[in-house]
Length: 346
Image (cartoon, rainbow, N blue to C red; front, side, top):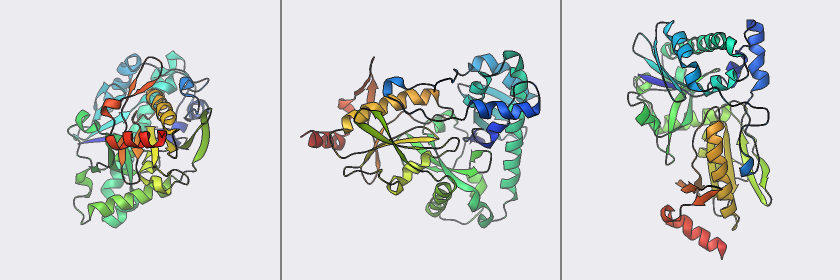
């Protein structure tokens, strides 16, 4: 079975990196250099925050990373930003390691091997801790407080067809997964973890959602991204809070008279524009630009899509990236959203 780690080392795990000198020094460098925040800027300015280096290419470290995993008796391979590990008992774990690539950009190349060794040690310790905890649960009552929800790209199911995650489809292009959410890492919950218990799946998702909202409270802020255009930003320095978009009606000021535009390019940030007037067109193009660019620089990327929440459900609003700015894909635009644009423009 496969599991995907989603909250990789941007919170407490971030404190466990190094600069090739000592474990004490290791603990300091990354937390000082790379606490991920989403830059709030005009669309043309979106990119890595000032002073942030470009991540090291996966091909530059793949041999060292695979060797560090194999030394622990596991098979490993790399696909894009994923490190895929298969344990001797057949269980697999898929880890987004873009954070490691960024960490290494701040470290001398001769120290990469040592950094990778510590990183892999952290990964294995966290996985073993989670496996032990999950196996120790004797009842649903024991387990349910550790369940949460997390959004994943829908193509995750195609990329890892052997996985059997507990999921549902709440938003087009995304899946909502049950996760085991512990202090240092969250991993997908599989059917084999919970099928032995008697439960109602909707109630289970509802409780897990409440757990996530309570564990990662947010304080939406309004920020100007262009003259005359303000967006509501919901973010966390290192926690997966994108699931808050599923509870958008609870976010103060998020919903306008005609709903809201919503995007979550990374697991730790959500952009919202309450729709009240014709400014929705400018907001749509700005959010498309932000989402398209941010998904390429985020440590935990999620989606470059922009959605319209019409008060009941999320509707994907397609766009095309032009040479200079996004273009509205009018030929594939949902008719109800096109009618809204026509109504507001008049």
